[in-house]
Length: 290
Ligand SMILES: C[S@@+](CC[C@H](N)C(=O)[O-])C[C@H]1O[C@@H](n2cnc3c(N)ncnc32)[C@H](O)[C@@H]1O
Image (cartoon, rainbow, N blue to C red; front, side):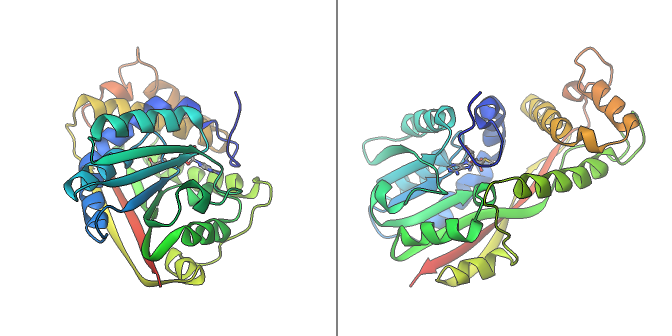
């Protein structure tokens, strides 16, 4: 399968999982979209960069509709995801909001050429997939109109979804996977051609990119146990992905536990457990072009 990004990840295979994840985030993201669009003038142009399957694209369309209308530009390097985001956003839009998809690599292409100056750029979990993150942020800043806002969702707390003692293998599997995932993240960044470290926090990066009025807020996605079926399906997606990226770093006993948790015929199958949940906290870093 072709890879369209710099991170060695085939994002197209993640479409269904990203859609499920997006529906679980939609209530929280709708509040974030209303908060951000509320900062904007009438008929704004908004850009969702690295839009994925459209988790935030749909809430942004709804918020723009409530705001009286505007333009939403969707940017992603993975055609399958961009198509899905565009279809979902257009299904939510009416005559007042127009949706424009752009297939582009944020590491090399100039975002200004996609749309002209924009009043809000939203980028969730995409900048850390670019080889030079500060350069990527600076490109986005250049796309802003004077007074326009950049909102980056990056970082937060480790997403929790499993009990500490699963009754399969040794207690603490989720914490060992979190440590292994952090190691995977380091190697994902190091293995990108042209990878440059960003040795500061996001507030400093936004200031270094020339923004003012810098602030941050965090939001919660909370689906406690016993959770609806979609949360259990998401838990299978999440554990499958964690298993793919961490299993070479885990002890054999943890790998055996993962095989049981991911086997639909096993009594411990994570997709049938009543004790899985989703607790996630994400941080949005905000800055304004002077
Ligand atoms: C972790 S997903 C985030 C998706 C979405 N923003 C969300 O929060 O659900 C990363 C997204 O960034 C896209 N992406 C990664 N590198 C990119 C690049 N260089 N240019 C444009 N999009 C990129 C991927 O295709 C994927 O859709």
